[in-house]
Image (cartoon, rainbow, N blue to C red; front, side, top):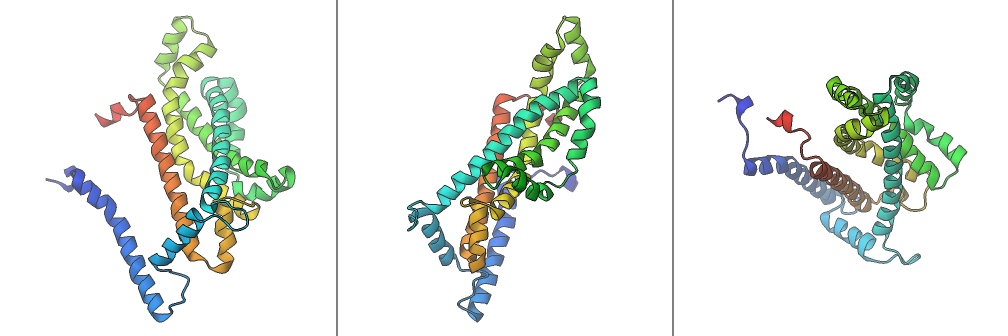
Length: 272
């Protein structure tokens, strides 16, 4: 049997999927042991016991100054900004993406400016946002919106424009208005694509969030990472990075599960 036709079973997939992570863990333990053997006070690659102590301090011990559990307060602050930015971006995408994908006039009017906006590096706009909107929450949320919205709009509009023309013609023969076609024909077809696009934009959204928090914030995951870096506190930085990754993975799985629950028909043709 050719290798291209060999499909691993469930146990094999689980083993193969876990293997890279096991290799990374073993490589870290070996490198950490080697550095600590040469210098017991080395902070670059802390031992696992240092991670456990740092997690206990950040997640399970109230802060002496504020009384808050820092990991959880930082997580809530960051997720609030992230969810607000993604929510606003999704609302804008639904309106503009449908308009560009369905209406030729709006496509001619808005598609060029959206394509242009998607080429602007969002992080380059961060100083402008801080000057124009201040150092509060608005500028951080705006960076996320500016960073992900153009890509979501382009993807949604392309998905809407790619729908079979026969669907639109059939709706028109049934006397459906443009508004009704957009809401009852196009929107249900492109919503699964929007959820998948949101999954793909989670990484950039977290990047913009961390960058904004690192420059100006008094709470948040990015703020904490850049606060403790001056003390070379890798025992805190590594767990925070791992926690951010887990949050992103959980959100990705949640959006994927929501898409499968709401639109179970999506992708069935490609799996036949």
